[in-house]
Length: 485
Image (cartoon, rainbow, N blue to C red; front, side, top):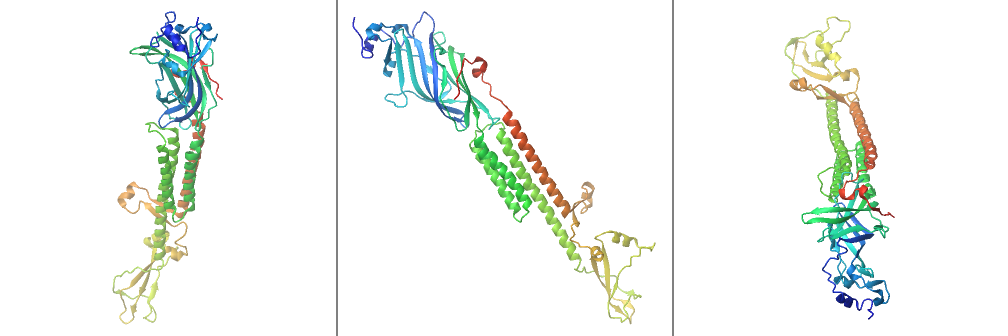
């Protein structure tokens, strides 16, 4: 009996037994059980933009081919042969494919990073292991972004053999799934487990295995790049309103442009989805607060300008004359001047004890802004007639000794200017004090609302433990849980 070498004479052994690598093994008339085990060495990236993830893994398959049983005495009493990876072209192996894989790197000849391993035992047990780089799709639900949890899966099945011919099973001899120490920049692996299913197609039923990864997002990046800057923009808008400088309106426009740029930058790194994300809610509220602060600034700036104009008009009335021509040729009375050349001033007397006081005088005296008329006349003692006179109007406040620019001096914004409009709009008189009070109250309302919203946001969204449901990755059907390091 000749003795074969370990690998040199292996082809001769295949020729002697007339081995056909195109024929599926027939083990006692049942399907070929392919036991699968996976070691995940690295997960490079999980992208919510393209909704995929990339991983490096060592993929192992083991099955029994009774045609390859050999006598150990013909192979130097070795119960296991370590064959070169090129011998896979001469042996039958499952046509494994991954249905949700987008791209992959298969072992190539003379490849340093991707090699394969082939072992054969004397009982006909074949072990085929190879290193694979996979980019697999991972549909995501970003409703709770950046506090979301995603489930990504990797499917494994035969492309051409139905479940009656080839049946995939998770290995019971060694760990079905092993995770090495993996660190991701914006995710952490919460759980990893395996399941098995039977998928039905038009061509038949196929055995499929699933590797399920549960990724929990680390929200530190969003805090540093989005939440903290947007909160700072809102606080800056409040500071700009409290300063009340001449350039406060320009400052508010710059602030709203800043938060708009922040929102656009955020949308550039996110996929275009039709639903509202948790981050959209926060940025939207920040934008609305800054926008309403700008509208409030415009309204109060308009009211201040109206008050300034009213103050200037009241000040001018105190010393600028208003020219008016009275009715001519009235008889000279006892108010004329003794020398007949010096103008006399006639001031209406206000007697509280007089019961026959003029009604218009009472109305004028009761109004803080009602004018009192001083009449300067030039008399002619010879003709005993009064020439046309010039009258001056002085505000009542000037006579009472009050300041027209007092803080209580106000202006009417609505009502009072038009009789038709006054029927629908009530008269609203504002003062400097009421403007300051309204500005303070509105600012406190904005601040209270934003603080309440922030507290509710960070107490509500992070505690929503919502995980998308996938029928292929139900925990009730898990066959093995990998230890997460």
